[in-house]
Length: 308
Image (cartoon, rainbow, N blue to C red; front, side, top):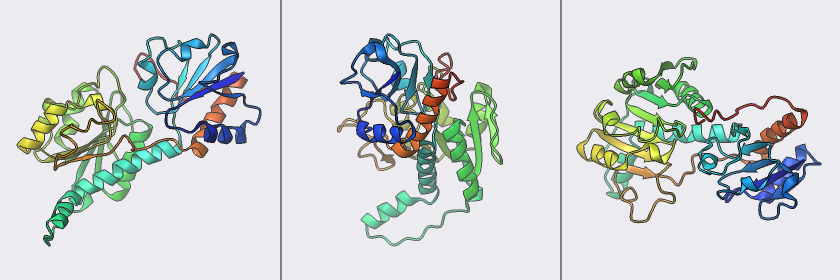
């Protein structure tokens, strides 16, 4: 049994060292030096080159280094084996913290103060209490649920929307296409943390923005292709939206000539809301490798039909 590793950003040496703290006999190999392909039965990866995993005829399971599986599903030669999504504390907590940070920035009008500082303008503004600000979260999975709990703890009036019914203590829940309009109507700050599926592509569009109260704002930490970029620019220009924070984009890295870079009411971050840290992530992956070795059921399996 051997595991193949690939990631353009996660250091292989660090992940190997952390995994071997839990599984000393782990046969850890890198994609660029895999040895005998027939010996590989596990893969741990993020954004592997198209067709790369098809080279291993005995591959039985893929462990994703990301919460979303679209970096794998875009490969037309992807082997038809179980895919385990990355659900672990440092990734879940990191993205939830990002969401809380930018919801707070919108709520406390931080952009206003940054502009006033540049102009050397002293002008007071006091945000209303958090309990009067309505936050809506599209996507109540592991990350969205954690963000909802954290925002609720701060004092916000939080609601969530998901494809199927989900419950988070103290959070008003909506589900299904018919109830999307209901959460939009009561949302001042909209957070998108939806998975990438055919149904969510382009969901952040002019029609959706029009259903929000005028002056609402958005935080998108879901997927770049969920946002219709021209519609966002138009909504900001008209005043239907007041501002936006974006961590994901249709083209990454964001091209230097893209209008988002210089827009006065858009905050751009480089797809850095969260990432699994090796110590925490390796502990979870190691537990799943041991489950796989013992023939036990694996958690957080991708539903290929649903897309997440």
